[in-house]
Length: 117
Image (tube, rainbow, N blue to C red):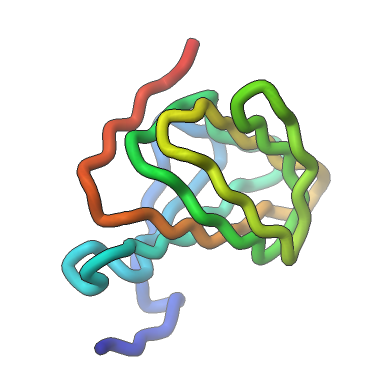
């Protein structure tokens, strides 16, 4: 068991995205089944269309974004819950002047990220 403050966890820039950082709040070596990550996408930023080999469970902490999942586009806000199945293309674009922030939990399994052109 561990307790820490999110402000003490280093964040990293996601190179394939624009204006996006990630914090791995609970890494695979601390959580036996799931990792917990916090993403922040700045206004005007986003993540490109991509797939992952693992599912994503997400909880929106703040801001407003459009998320493409497969052929559907969703408007998401604080308090929304998002599920992205493994292998389904998805992308993010921040809407408005506030950063879009969310928690993302993924199973601790091998993951391959593929950018979809």
